[in-house]
Length: 119
Image (cartoon, rainbow, N blue to C red; front, side, top):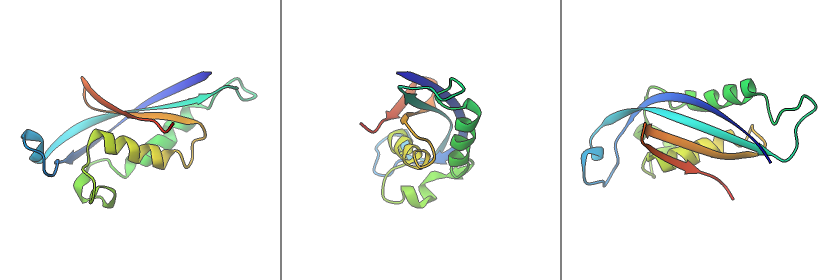
């Protein structure tokens, strides 16, 4: 199995509804996103997928989140904009244009990460 990974970023604010602690208050993150694509075979050029194409498609999904207040987005009106829910949102959007998307990982800090994979 071959895997490729690209990393991108976006900046946004959020707050966690019904959370008891600092994260219930409005705050922001410099989110880091990793997209992983897998394939048992390579294309005629010897690639799973062109890194440049994957990065462009990931960035197109992230553009909707960048410099926004996530709680105001329709996708997060009923679910908290946690790293877990953000990972699933990005996965669902990106999988529409990326074949064999394996996982999306979302870091809200350098030491805290959530990953969504559809198995």
